[in-house]
Image 1: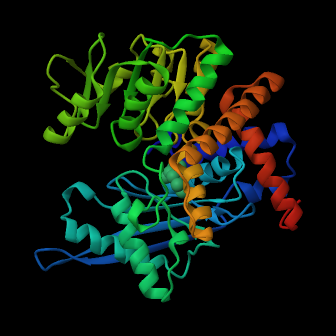
Image 2 (image 1 turned 135 degrees about the vertical axis):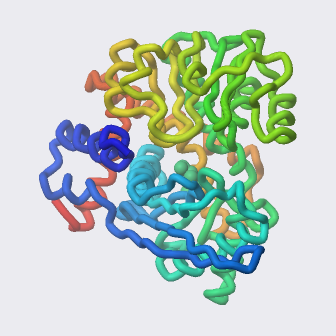
Length: 417
Ligand code: GLU
């Protein structure tokens, strides 16, 4: 990984810029630049063929000044400790920018879940929980789903935790299936929150989104729901989607139900009948109004940013854009809704899930949507106004809003000044 694309170095560079503008003291800056705690461990798993495999895993608690650390667990073959560190930093700024009383953390396992059987996946998930059980807890650090982890995986992990502790403690993990005390509305929350911010961006830009073209990179949980909700809530015409195997394009628009069924049947969106196959790189450069990076980090770089034509870039992925690309997009007048604002809907409904678990009393879906909309809309305008006032790009503005709140909590606790 070149240092230009090392996500942790990128997250530190982003913080450095914000720290200078906020006038943070050297001690405060140094404290916020690195995780507070990290756990690196192995998970031995007996595979279906009887042999053992040893998986490398991480849990990083970046900062818990504003509340229990919060963040998902990623199962990915290319996972590294630096990726997890960066993602835990972004979680810290994410919970802060939407002003929920939580800190930031992240977990990861180096594995390819697509090559594991259901039994192997369950043993790996339970093994992860056995190793982190003493390190996490509803009032310490609360995991959730992320790339390639699912509500079912959260259910196995919850069960393992409750067996270890001997208590019912559903608030130890969020993104659970609804029958096991998950929240209604958690499934599509990341995309829904992002779509609310696109709606607000269109208002401040005086753009009409009805029938406007959009492209979505990545067709996992966030990407698929962005397709559906972009159509249902904003009237967007989704002309391109993609996954790890490639993308498809149809200027007349791609039908959501048919595309999702195709992906389920064939394992990819590629070769969808009637659409043209394109590459992931081509998708980013299409002449669309809204571009939604919903895959992994490091996709929009100095190399391709100059060719991006979208008016709104809604970052449902974590870390899709490098700092060099940010400058280029800003100069070109693209309106970027930065990742830890745009995709904060997931953790916001995770927070609602924890609140409901703590009350042991559950909300209607309408209540979830209404409260999510209020949080996302307030956060969007706080960032937008900061960007206007300081004449900086939206990501830096989001950092200014979020880092200031975390620094205040750190200072008030007396950890650093
Ligand atoms: N993994 C999601 C994220 O990156 C959700 C985290 C959570 O719900 O705690 O925001």
